Picture 1 (cartoon, rainbow, N blue to C red):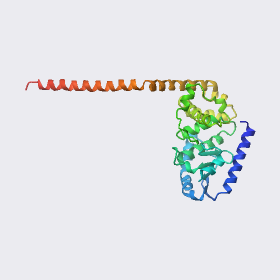
Picture 2 (cartoon, rainbow, N blue to C red):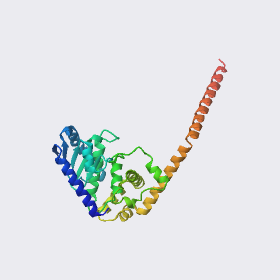
Picture 3 (cartoon, rainbow, N blue to C red):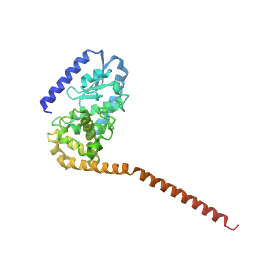
Picture 4 (cartoon, rainbow, N blue to C red):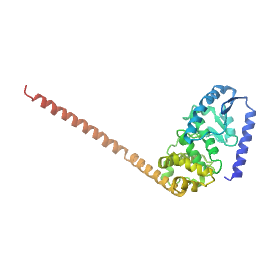
Length: 300
């Protein structure tokens, strides 16, 4: 998605948001470092956001070793349909808009689908934090989403479907979405969108495990200086984008191969394991009998 199209899209979202917001009865709570707009029935939730914000803010500041640097506005929406009109996607439960530093949350989803207010708020705030952290350059969407998921316990702002093996299936069929195709935007088709989220989380975990978060910060700093992602990876982690993608895919194939082996031979493995337990138990019984006989044979 070009920058011009992206700006138009953000502007449309904002217009829809403003129109919907005017149609609602909204109150505002302003606290140190945060503003919360909420529909009247959600006052308790708004107060909980106020309580959670300093904790999440501190966690992010310690992780990135820098101050937040902006005052976010959190908008709590009570009705799921009203939120969907803003988000334009039934699978989305929250969204961050870097322009204006806004976080919009569908409160009706916060107690379902493993979503909680704290992790959702942290995930969206992380998006805003990253967009503010890398102001001097362009940050790939897959990296922004991946880091945000990694820092919020794997939670994304999308309701993951019932197919939990999507990443494994795409790896086995060699149908992973190339990183270059997720640099500016994610696919709109639901299955591809879910896969894009899973891939982003997976590669972020791979980066952290292989290079450590200190190197991730270096990469972000180079992006902020205006480096493209390939140059930032080379400077920050000593690896090209092409090589990173290649190694990540190889690690996925190894994981999937081992998982497939375990799945295919599950009954044989369980049978062998059960046989070993029975053998161990039989040997223990024999040892006890021998010890008992030895004790009976001792002279008094």
